[in-house]
Length: 174
Image (tube, rainbow, N blue to C red; front, side, top):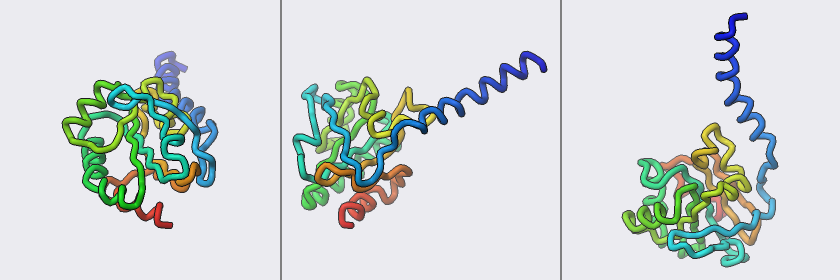
């Protein structure tokens, strides 16, 4: 077989093998205790959502990158529904690999009323299986994990930006 063909096959199959390897990691399932973590927010303050809001409703929404069109749309939709979430005692945290400074700028620019957590070491994305996409080394996948009283009650893998706000409310209502 030609060496060029072998090289092309290796290059084509490598991402598939990496993806398959990542899929073998421990899955987070509905009913599991949510993994505890601490991350700095956009001010640099260390936040521990599961301790701060123990026995409360928590939304952890993972998103790829501050300032990108879909991430901005998602954040602004959550901002616009924030009063509704607060009325239902739902606490929201956005998580991406962006820095504290990038989060501060993004939050200020879009007047976001909830904390943005900097997972620069990618540890929380791994805990919550939000780094299992092919680009997981560079960006977390868009994924939302809903927690109530310390347990995972829903995992939204395929976030639909048109219905995301209502999907979260429906999951907590069930």
